[in-house]
Image 1 (cartoon, each protein chain N blue to C red):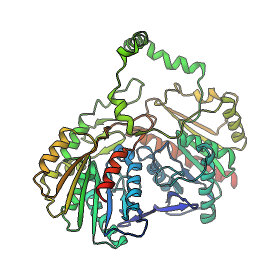
Image 2 (cartoon, helix red, strand yellow):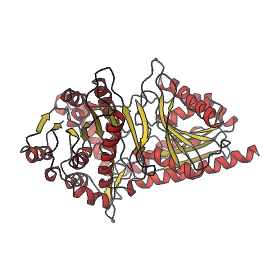
Image 3 (tube, rainbow over the protein chains, first blue to last red):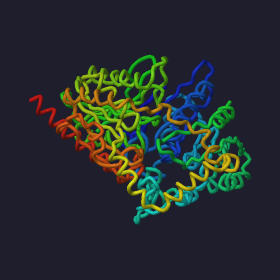
Image 4 (cartoon, one colour):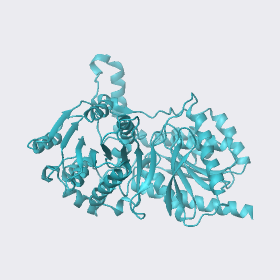
Length: 262
Length: 289
């Protein structure tokens, strides 16, 4: 496993390469695209485990942090979804370069799925695009967050100040992370149903629990010949946060994704 | 400010990020930023990154890194507990900085299990000259109960909840049993692997006395989230037999969550710790002159 910084020096991105293990190298490598906010924190170990398992199958795997998140440059109030989409493009090029392959599989978790779709639509080197509990559209995601917001000055039963609220300026604070107005605007412009993904060989949609949103995405994508949907039951709430910052490790899903890339 | 990846130790290296100020002064202490529970080295709500960048702005180098088996660092073989391995692994990072950068003194920062690791490391490593902890070991005093229960006493909702709990105890389990959706949803939740057990108060008191005798500086912040701290001076009262003198900088953020989810608390933590760090480094530099 090799952690490193890549990209422009002012906007450097933190990445971790899991080089293929064994002797039979796969012809394409794998890029993992993170979720956002507390979902990113909670899924870090799951994505690391997924990367390790895929590397044992012969894939070079890269996971990385978008600008303003994780160890990458900048702060959240300085970036938006367009930057994150561009970061995926930079990461794909970096991965192709270091692993000397012509094409990549891209796996996007939650918001990472939506961003990956936007980035991959503009390329011809995507072997497969894999949505993991993907967010279908930016406005759906923002509405999902808005449903959980409450009064800025509310305190819970233990006397702890509420951290899920919207500022008068429009900035949304959710579980310790902020979405600025520009970011919300850029996210609102993204909708998988409106993105032309026909150049991609295979699109997989892996769902851990059925919801109206996941069904809507299936309906929108069903017309595509290259689209397949899998349901692997592993119910959990991505937006939940416990007192200590516990993490999620949905093994059935991780194994399911690994199996689908065999 | 520059950030670089470091890999420390073999065969399973500890992975971290060095955050360097524009100008490095090897006579100045560096800061080691520890994991909080199972969260990787960026820290709860990216707090470790914010702290590191704020320290660099003030000319202080820091390393945020993952202990073995957490975040980007692989597990190492062995049967030792986290309390035993954390000081050893912290020492590896200090050795690295001492060898590569000539830095000889260190300041530690940790939240929750990271706070415990800071205390344990300071006890055994004399290169540690100060530490900052969020929700450190602390014990309940008689005043704790007064401050904790007094505001609750007059809340109707509390009494309703209390009565409901009593009813639940009386009614047969079958009627009350409701395998909640939460329970089902949490089957994929990996709980914090570090079981936080406070050592006996006398043991911590004795440890702190030895640190005070060494002249360590302490910045201790408590939150509301842990429910075991209820008034600003509880830490001093909890260790009333220790004379911290001017070396203890104590804060109680009485509406903050344990993992600092509110943006105003995040900003306050960064400001408070950075200011304390600058003051402590000034004091240390004066002592050396």
